[in-house]
Image 1 (cartoon, rainbow, N blue to C red):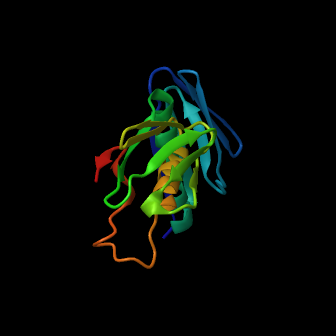
Image 2: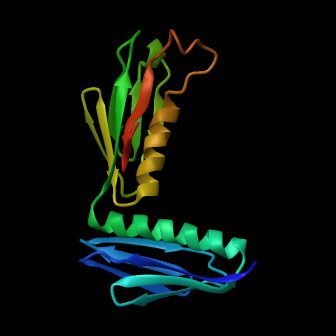
Image 3: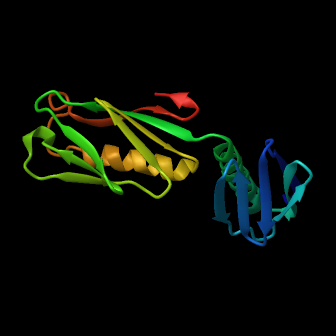
Length: 180
């Protein structure tokens, strides 16, 4: 069931997209996002103010790849216009927790009264603001911002304790495009 497929992505004002083989580069507002895709039989080109992804005689594999590349390019174009923002909240019931940014990592002290300092990695190009018990993670790259937020949440993961009683931790409360 092979068929010809074509999908287009509109390029926002102030954003430019260039494609050189497998490398897609999106520039806009002083930001640059570069990504390499294994495109296989898919042809990608920039026509005026839109990017066209097409494949002749596409199988299910090419159809899935077109959808994946289309979604990533949409995120790259949106990220060139404005940052993706994740909001997290520090919840502590038992012991007050100290959270601060030190270089490219976030240091969490006194989690559940532990003497061990927990650390979370901040990826390149990500800005982290800590304001009381609110943490804001923002970046023009949605994957870097999301991974940094996930690293923070994972750093305070509890094992071997009853989650109904030990509700301490850092939790994502708002993601780009939706609220949890």
